[in-house]
Image 1 (cartoon, rainbow, N blue to C red):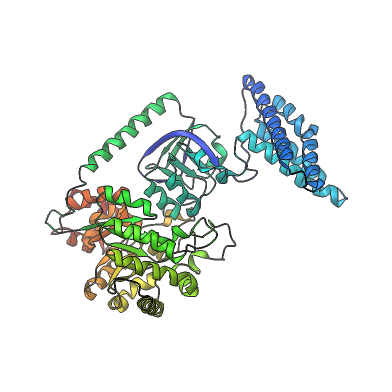
Image 2: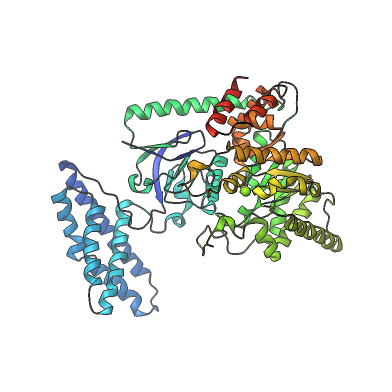
Length: 575
Ligand code: PEP
Ligand code: MG
């Protein structure tokens, strides 16, 4: 049994068998064996060699007859190499003598072979080291029971499994929406990354940034994932398993109790109306939004429609997706224009990365640079607005000039649609996201140009505190209660109030029930979050009293130290 720690996401507990994907090459586990385990380890090693030989013969027989003869000869060379004593026999001796695991024994001998080839004078022979790597890599995959092509091996294999991966991009993770996976664990990544946000919306526990997860967890091993504590337990004993099963039951019951709040109106104790909206990534998420009785969609992250495909979706395909959400929701839907860039790359981040992606050509900057990408989206969103209440929201606004350019483009697109005889809502509200400190500080200067503001705390905190939200090395600095963050939130809420426009919050902070009373006291009245968190936040709204909260919050706003602020925010629960 082994316990490991990382950043926990979601409040649930999952218990299931591990499925390893995206294990980094050559990350070889090393462990010792007891005397009585040695024979079985040798058998395991020999089975992996046999499986590799069978796979190579299968590849060979699949080669078409008219293929060039070299295609077959390179397989023959691999098959020959697989018989080399350094690969097929010496690891067995090492397992027997040193009582070490097969992967480790194989890697030691294959590295000697690689070094031997590397020192040869003859260039042709020197290149043979790559063949050794290829072939031993295949044997290692068979030992670790990892499909050779990992995620591409077929999503259906992940069903009811705990997915363990070195790294998962948002493009990888969004594919889990159609799969019933139990939980996921990654070596890299932090709690506010888009991958983490997707885990929350999937309503499954996840632990991110758990360095060594892919090294210490074996394929098929039983794993407990505790999203609340950020812990995984590998190969748990019966006592621990029983304890976690009990906790899983407790979490389940708590969720059921919260379900009873579904039909109550989100009113504070003093009768103030609060609006609770849902964040969605795909049209399929609407069901969860409706189940939690969300009063609309406060953030539709349209960029997921653009991922995992070679070409961007056409205007018509976008129109179909947006109109599905708008017409089915039966309540206002806020469609955010494309926020690609940074960690949300179309190809899952496998392309050439810019030097500083979070500060680069992202969101509205990318859209203004590439009108061929932006215009079809504006047309599709505007056309969808004819089918039900719709709002357009611009991400990452950082200057007035940028905002003016977008507003001009929307006006031009409307003109075009009028000319084409297409229907749209001419009064569609246009809002800006406040997620760059520049926008929060100057919110009073441009609020009058907009119909609403929405605070994106995920990025606002990232950019204010200068910490990359996907870099788990600096995640400990990610602090929604930092006084500078609280001030920027307050500035934005006040700017909205002065301009007479609504202010929403759609970052993760809005869905974190620990902060609900604080935000209410700061003047926030509209919260948008993943549907899973909505009833928990509603519970806090029902307990809050706006006759006493603002004074308490004014006191908190005078404090400089985050820890003291945290204590005072916790104390708000007793009011
Ligand atoms: C935010 O930055 O808070 C936000 C809601 O946008 P995203 O998480 O998609 O960047
Ligand atoms: Mg953002």
